Image (cartoon, rainbow, N blue to C red; front, side, top):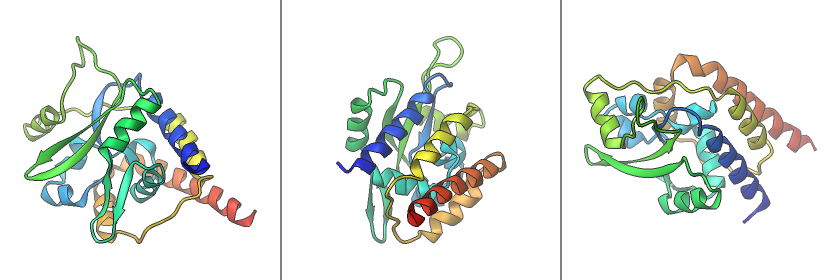
Length: 204
């Protein structure tokens, strides 16, 4: 494994581990245009990992690809590698993290559970139960605080030797419409941090 990929995996693990004390929820590993095309409520019920990290969706996909957790195929874009994620979770001993898939209207989505459950006030839920609650208007997605750990992740991302595939314009449009306004400034700030680190590396 390349040193840069190892560094990325370590930084991602620390970010996910930092979410352990938060209230548990299932999140989309990436925004999948196929699912969003069926129902944009998917992004509300299962916010993407990029939103938690306060970085752009396309940047998050490049990072996950760099870490060996996604595959990229021209024409179909990115898709998560569940076996690679399971190995990563075991490798990094992320006890409060799990991955799963769930089919919505014949389209398979890939989800990651972060945070902790509480038997009294915040009981365990499956992706299916979360989606049912969303359809019935009874879902409340937990608010989480990630500013410190997302800043640390952004700084590390800026040092990685990333390779950028062709832009998926369809995903960019969906990502823009599904992101909430409260996260836009954080996304911009962390994207600027990453770009600044990349420019410094190029100059050096």
